[in-house]
Length: 363
Ligand code: KG4
Ligand code: ZN
Image 1 (spheres, protein in one colour):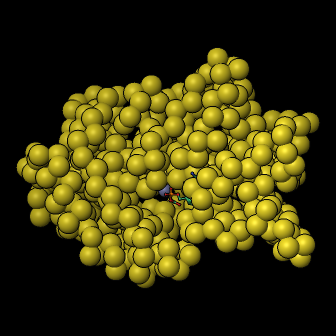
Image 2 (tube, rainbow, N blue to C red; image 1 turned 180 degrees about the vertical axis):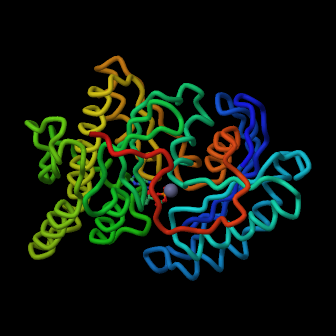
């Protein structure tokens, strides 16, 4: 490991293959200010046929897509590897077989070009994504990471220091959207179809949408209580299942589908917004940064904005391209880790589950 001067400008090729997106991107700049030069995302639509990601198919598709993705990212940025200072790659967490394609490729590619290899934690990538579009999305902030695999509430006083406030006890938020979508007969991934369907339902003030209990949302909860920040979505999913069965029995599912979707989404959003605002309040943060695929949800963004505006705060959400898995966020986190001298791990391997570097459980 070598030291590099903080603030120096670097150009990094990022590679991401942790799930079902084969992605490569070029980002340049310093940890304080970065420019997105290119971002290529090959989404593996094949998994839609199976209603979920099939790990072996994902690995094989990464193998097919990785070289074209890297070539396209360099071409779009108008650079070659000679112009790049390092290769950053997601090494954890994710599907091991999928991660292995990216890490093996990145290791060989960096070695062949004589460039440092920077291992990046996928979730740290999600934290950096929004900053590529909005320079204000920098620490200190409260972060809500909501994807198909993760639901994390973090306090981020500075890059590299992450206090874990809460997480899900069972299903990740995106997973709950996907499972509820399946119950409602909607396609996979289910987040967007649920959001679109929910938007067609009558608002609680004008109709009778289903109202589901808010998971772990005790108004009297205090900081330090287990349920103050943690979430749980499997009970909500079961409540939706019962509502769907009842509607099927009475032959009214078609009429009730939108209302059920709306009731589910409202319960999720109210829970996430309340917990995030609690965190911003406790740590006196005025910025909230959203990340992960569920951050694409406009109703969630709007509700979070309304809640934070009441506290004179702001909400930064990435555009869909950078909210879902992409290599630009990996290159961005790579620039930060490179500046800290964290590169050149010849024994780098892929790891299915690993805590964020710099993570501590907030007391
Ligand atoms: O971050 P991501 O692309 O992949 C990982 O899981 O890492 O997140 C995918 C998840 C899926 O569960 C999908 O249903 C959800 O994000 N999602 C949404 C929306 N768009 C994608 N959930 C709610 N509303 C959306 N508009
Ligand atoms: Zn992700």
